[in-house]
Image 1 (spheres, each protein chain N blue to C red):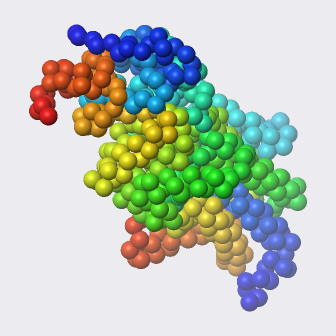
Image 2: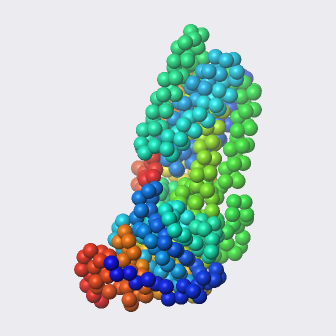
Image 3: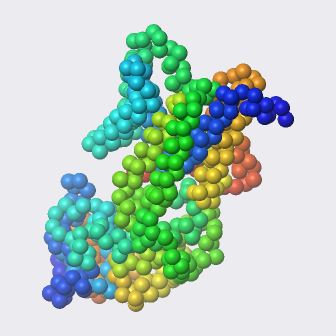
Length: 255
Length: 284
């Protein structure tokens, strides 16, 4: 199996200031079942990384390990030089499923406001600035007119925009997004990619799991996963027909 | 007018019942909201039934029943957590078995003593017409504790209802706040059993909060609606019990369930999308 190691800048990156994510011989999985073994990756602050693979390829497991929801089974992983889960106010996570969003008596604005909780903490007071960040995030996803609508009243796509706005309101240094464009219409996808450009331009780092090759091609680094690291490198080097065939097991039309 | 007010003014026991009942409504509204939103009905039900042997042993030993209930609920909670953590059996099976086991144990203890039959009925169905001042004071303390904990933990509790993983990522230990929530459920059941009984306390936890979930747009509003529906159930249940000479706590719960179905029907007739209220989480 051909492995393109993405180690171009590992030595410069060793300084904690510039290493947003650092994985060495990382094994990920659940309990004793390894899903992906020996992940090596150094991601600099301000870079974007796409994880590409089929369902069950290990994308979600990797994201959960990055944010500290899953313990690594072996090796080392740090973000900003710290163990996963120890910097909640700097890291935002968009999960693929929302457990009970359909039942909850919550308005869209309540959901987006939760993005501020890790910064405000248990007992802190929400400030004017928190409110501004929340309304700004809703504007970015084009749902400011739905602020007072109950969550159950929104369509699936509008709910997804709400969840993305929650992540934007976080103002995190690292955004970890699990299939963020799933369920979004064309306008929603456009707003999302604009929002990601804004996030990157203010210096945030982006990690996205996606099936969408076009979305992946826009990222600085692409990692192909199929219960193993098929390849990792720049979009140009990695998104080739033969590597995609290895990743997806089917022929993908070249574009 | 006499029919609606006099029973409470003329009889001290009715006024006490109303007071204790309204306090139960408030605790059950707050805690029931979390039970409904997080799909914890099953665990709550298990606690409610698991306290029976605790109470039975306490009465046998001559110590206050509330202490026995508290110990029973702690044993039940730790048992459930242990089985859920250590075993690969689904937690449903584990909880159901501990629930049946505790109930059987309670009945065995009760059956060993002939003098228990009267006590057993009051444990299961409560003694709302015989509530002591002491029980009312305990209820007031419970309202304060539950209110304070809910206000302090508002953010993690909200995140837990939304998505436990988001709570964890936001820096609030999902497990810790889950257990705090379970402790509040246990506290509610332990302090409410003397009033409405352990079989019926669960109706007061689910029915008013369930009705509130159908109409509220915010969690705070859901709690308020639940408290109003609970208090109305207490008032009309007691009134019906007084005038028709029927069992008081059963009448209260029947009114609460009745209110739920009225709200449910009205929402359906108004063409509101009736939301699923799941008593189990969609996925673990």
